[in-house]
Length: 461
Ligand code: ARG
Image (cartoon, rainbow, N blue to C red; front, side):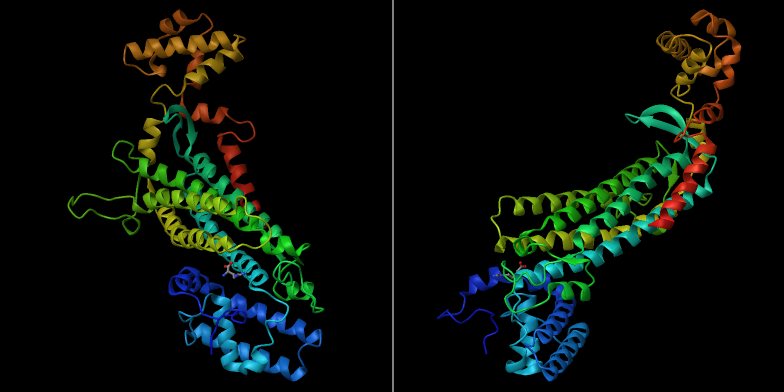
């Protein structure tokens, strides 16, 4: 008994190299539970269209239940002659229901509408798993925020010391993009929740089937408006590949900072032993491999996105076999993230921050120069002049190896007549941070508000 779904007009089976090229069960087998769910729904609409009797429906559903159990237990697996997951499961159905009944289920559906539907189902479940994993990283970051409400650090631009900020503000700056990633995952689902089942090969079905009933049973919001689009479009997959790549890129920025922060030169933080690795030759080493794998895999996620877009580009409507190349990049991106997300959460949540060192470095590199300029502005000096004067202060301090707070009254007055000794009030890290008290700034009260808003957003997601 040949298992191919299309033997009728062929006088020979496929050449060996043809069959090998065609094979997709090594990756599309993960769609099997969704394929069977689709088959149950399809059996019910065939029954409603009077194409299956009551008894036939009962027999069909029983055979599908037995097949589902054997797929779940690993009892039933694809063989080499099964071209894809759909072919393998039809073989399994026929083995259980017999060729007469088993052969009836394929009426009015095509692998083209099936695969487009099942892939959406798989991705929608995967999006929920990814979102849960991202939530754990957010929790780990918030744990650190809550442990260090008052710790200060040098904020940087161009990786150079810029202005002092709260560590909590910096950590929340990593939380914010992750909240947007969670929002993107949720928003994506609105467009993914459309079922192509019933689109057939491309033109729809003539058998009085009910795509809306199938859509509902499979957890979709609606059936596809257009059967050609239903079978030909993969923007839902490309969009998800982007959302996952963007997430990877956001995680890579946390990773990069963890790598830098744990160097001897920075000494901002130490990795927990459980989330670091050693060296096979250098006994002293403690390496940030979780962070490095995150940085590396983000490149892989970008590749999966660009690879898929290249597959989709310029394909004529409707289904082309090129589209079989849509699944592996997404399966891979999700699989990589499922490895990464718990590890990043573990690494971030167990980092030990050396807040004394960060505080000591916070004023280094004249990070309070902007505070001098803004103090002068409050005395009525134009900012252009004030900026110049603050720069002069840096030059004078640097030339004698001192900090801005060490400038004498004479040195200050020599730079600008308005620079009275009171300027020293703003020449502290805490004073500088407290002064940035507009909405979204690093002042402790604003950061506390931000932290509270994050909790509200999370509760809504
Ligand atoms: N395995 C194919 C895919 O993943 C679905 C089968 C469609 N094949 C076909 N000859 N129309 O896209």
